Amino acid sequence: MSILVTGGAGFIGSHTCVELLQNGYEVIVVDNLCNSKEESLRRVQDITGKSILFYKVDLLDQMHLEEVFQNHQIQSVIHFAGLKSMGESVKIPLRYFHNNITGTLILLEVMKKIHTKNIVFSSSAGVYGDVKNVPILEEAPLSVLNPYSRTKLMIEEILHDVIIADPEMNIAILRYFNPVGAHPSGQIGEDPNDIPNNLMPYVSQVAVGKLPFVRVWGNNYPTPDGTGIRDYIHVMDLAAGHIKALTKLDQNPGLITYNLGTGRGYSVIEVITAFEKACQHTIPYKIMERRPGDAAISYADPTKANLELNWYTQKNLEDMCKDAWRWQSQNPSGYP
Ligand code: UD1
Image (cartoon, rainbow, N blue to C red):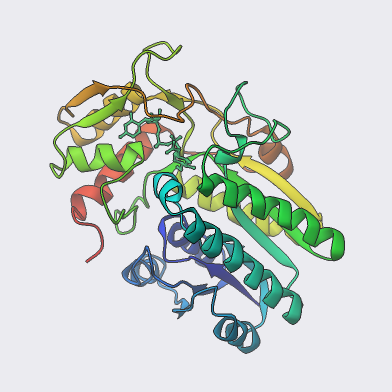
């Protein structure tokens, strides 16, 4: 029995493939490589000494997707594939809706046809929108601030309807906070196409000399040092959460939703300082105006995942920065 990983060549996907292989699963990856490189999978195989079956297939291509399902006994699907830039989604919303929503609809259609019942869906803390209270519980009100997050929320809602129609399905919705870091080997990591939008990859690129300074989006938030606070989570802890979710799905829980975060927030300045320690030189930064749509503080209450999945994060901010730095310094231009 195999696990089909959509978007498995991407940042979180590739790290999850490592965990899957190391936990004895057979892994099939489907990825259109629109925002990732096959090299990541080659390196996953190097790290684990195990092999992955890879299909360069777009989820919008139903015929080829069906072939993959027909040729293998797929027990569960982990669904990462999707466009993920919040800023870009504001500019090209229709592409985001078509790619993320239609791609998921086709995947679900094929799963229905082949009777594959288990799916883990990668959602985002973006579904909590304008955060009012922290820590954020799964029951917090949902709202969205951009089309990217709307695709995540819409897919969550679609999954709620899908399971009503087919109660034999098992669905885990995982809401990620801020995934950062890299595999401790430094062989795989985050490889943004353009100038990064997110803090940690931006800081990494300043540290390695590719960008001149970090732009700190506002230092007048109601936080101890005035800069925004987020729940950064090491990508290997996040990957481990997917293995726990898969195990849970074997117990036929129906639809389950979990926050995957550490439960602890760090400010932008704290992240820069921790990264300086990891790379052992100073990282220049400038205070800028606030970025529109940014919350002051966001961090998870991960208690539900702790108790129900027996999932606990192991890595701290120092590990996240050390591992991100190892990846960035060994691969200054990302994957070849
Ligand atoms: C962002 C997205 C969110 C997406 C998430 C994925 C926005 C508004 N939100 O969330 O939709 O789900 O990434 O990880 O883009 N910061 C700087 N300078 C930078 C970059 C960031 O000061 O160059 C600050 C931000 O103001 C924020 C913190 O760093 O306080 C984290 O930002 P970021 O990494 O972009 O993540 P989110 O804003 O949480």
